[in-house]
Amino acid sequence: MTMITIVLIVAGWWVMIRLYPVFLVLVAALTIVGTLGPAVQWFEARRLQRGFSIAIVFSALLVITLLIITLTIPELLAQVTSLVDQEPALRARLVARLARSPLTAPLAEALRTIQYDVLMKSSAALAFEFSTRVLEVFAYSLGAIFLALYMMIDRDRLRGGLFAIVPRSQHIRLSRVIMNLETIVGGYIRGQVITCALMAVFIFILLVACGIPNALAIAVFGGVADVLPYIGIFLTMGPAILAALARGPAVTMIVLVLMLAYEEFESRVLVPVVYGRALRLPSSVVFFSLIAGATLMGIVGALLALPVAAAILMLLEELRVEMPGETESIEKAEVQKKDDRGEQEYLRRTEGMPAEQAAGVAVEITDERKKEEIGQHAPPEASLHDKKLG
Image 1 (spheres, rainbow, N blue to C red):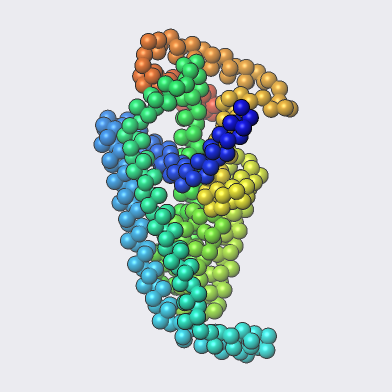
Image 2 (cartoon, rainbow, N blue to C red; image 1 turned 90 degrees about the horizontal axis):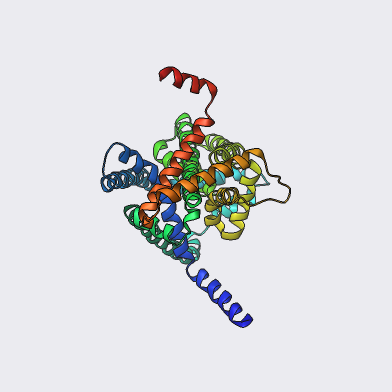
């Protein structure tokens, strides 16, 4: 039995490693579902059919994506082409400035005798490998989008299948976990949108103030690239600094210094505040999660670190895992009583029901419980105002 157990563990680990891309596609699809779900529910609340609501949301997402690509890619390609044409003049100007000082004279000589054909040969293999990875990421992303679409269309059947394999006494808790996961994913995506939008606005204002052309396209590209941790700083700063080279060294230095200052402000202040509030994570946990995720899984790990950390803390709370130094509080005892009453009501209302219909009842009870908790935590002024309106 010990040998069989070891073989099964090794085989399971091998399968998980082989199915790693599939797991990432599933996580991406669930993220898309959690992000677009509230928009679909908003249209459903306006008495639109679910299929029509899903079509509207995904069509809007497609239009926005095409607009971003159309707005940024052609302008950036034109900018890169212009910079390549201006490269000999810019290099000669830089070499002349560096040659004035004995300290920078060797660097000026190296720039004067640089051979681009050698660099092109050495980078050809890297460029091919990079293009292959880009095609892979595009294919997996497309698969995640279609998988999310199918999951949203077949929501009731998928949810019914999940509830069918879980004991009925745990359905309310399962429903609450699913709802909290949707909240966490939505908060994470909102945080990404806020930070990326602020980055795009900052780049646009900076480039316009410095008189640099194509500011809108570069700003949109920088905002989109800001979603990537660690390497996002190079993708956001690179096009802005390259565009500033044509305006002279003074403007280039201003753009470089201000971009570095904003990147430091974003990483030290903005990210902990935005994601900490959205995901209810302390700043220390945010920093530790980003470092741990990047160390374990690179860029993908850094992207998934914050929602995974928030989900783990939520599961510990929902499953009532007792921590070593924690004592039972009156508030937790009251929550336990409410959970017991909710589970009894659910069992009474769903007796004899199939799992798919029972899942809908569990979601309804959980939603009512959540609205009740929000009402209890509302400020006294709002409650008094509501009474006056009533």
